[in-house]
Image (cartoon, rainbow, N blue to C red; front, top):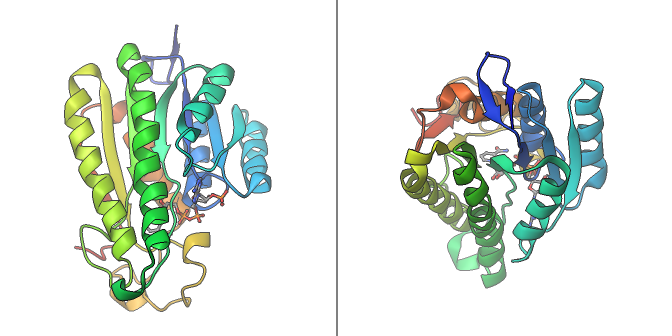
Length: 252
Ligand SMILES: NC(=O)c1ccc[n+]([C@@H]2O[C@H](COP(=O)([O-])OP(=O)(O)OC[C@H]3O[C@@H](n4cnc5c(N)ncnc54)[C@H](OP(=O)(O)O)[C@@H]3O)[C@@H](O)[C@H]2O)c1
């Protein structure tokens, strides 16, 4: 089964899953993908109300969406989550690995648990979800995986050794899987945001980093979501293994 994508082309029937989509970059991404014609599974962990609001807003705009809850740190979560989405919407053909966390501290102070949790959510869970979605994508000869990395990882940020390691790992994973599946119409890319105003950065003093950003302001979730939406689009079919930096010029 195939349906029109609005450009006169057809794309296979399926859905998009955005992890960590109860707010911030994930919520904006869910909206962007719904606007692109995808039924969207809006994943949340601790904020079902946020996810329900995103679903309601997509439905008000004429789109289709469901909220799906899971703690992605559990090894079984990927399979359970994807099975649930498949039952509602069919195969997941667009996966946005957006869920992420920080547990900052200078390296001598980072505890084992803080190291492990950040790697678990930001990297291991993204791998489990990607692995589970690849088979249906390869079968459909269409798939888009977009991993939300960071400018931290490729470059240093003191106090974030665990976060940097997770995001650098995510970029290595992105490039390697992209090469493995490129011949089958499946693309795997990453976006690397700079500083974006969301719940994740709410503890940072407003304006504190503006001097370091050539654009002199943080990014908005919508500005990141627009780039994810492009990488997930039919038009981006020849973009794979790439890292799209979206940081107001910070790492230029
Ligand atoms: N904001 C920035 O400046 C910035 C910069 C570079 C990269 N990023 C990346 O952008 C992504 C989105 O972050 P954001 O800024 O939009 O912050 P956010 O609003 O806090 O989003 C992070 C999401 O991850 C989910 N999450 C965290 N741990 C989870 C777990 N164990 N299992 C399942 N879900 C989990 C949270 O879900 P619940 O709220 O439902 O618990 C939350 O919705 C992250 O990967 C982050 O590293 C952000």
